[in-house]
Length: 242
Image (cartoon, rainbow, N blue to C red):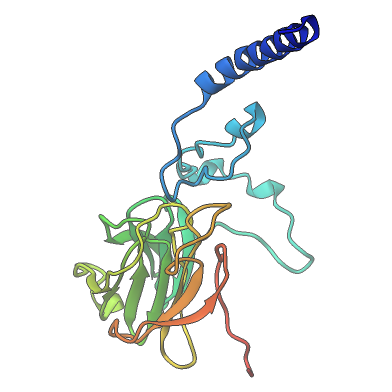
């Protein structure tokens, strides 16, 4: 080996040694791969990004006398009053035919109902032990509930508020991913149930079952895809004409 080639070999060896020393600590700090469907997939590997998770625990209802209503400003001609309190993690509101207000929860396991009795409003639990019961809708006296991986119903709910029956599952073959797994539920003009299955992550290629809006018959049959290519939706409504 010539003097020049030996010098090049030493330079190359030294460079490789420096690179290996630099890569060693970084490689040691790498975490195990995230599981499929993790909400952290796609998160930048920076200290600032790491502070974004985990999500804070769900809120606790504020006592009625602690609500800062005096700080809320309404347009001229409007007033803001307390309607009800004590409903934990309220998410979706639906009004029944007989005036009952039903409230879902995205993080807790219950469906509440607010009953007005002579000006006094009572908060009741009409269903419990549910998993992510975010989506609710009422149709002809029946309360439909969309949980993380299934859809159920309670018939004649407003006639049985004192002793509501357990929900009856009408469709259960849905993905169980927590990320974007909570659903919204509505009834279309065609009297079908509409709901979404969100993408199971922030940055990924979703499976064929994810990132879609579906519809079902009211008995849970006839699953169809209505739209695809969604990350997640926060509700649906219908154009009054089209």
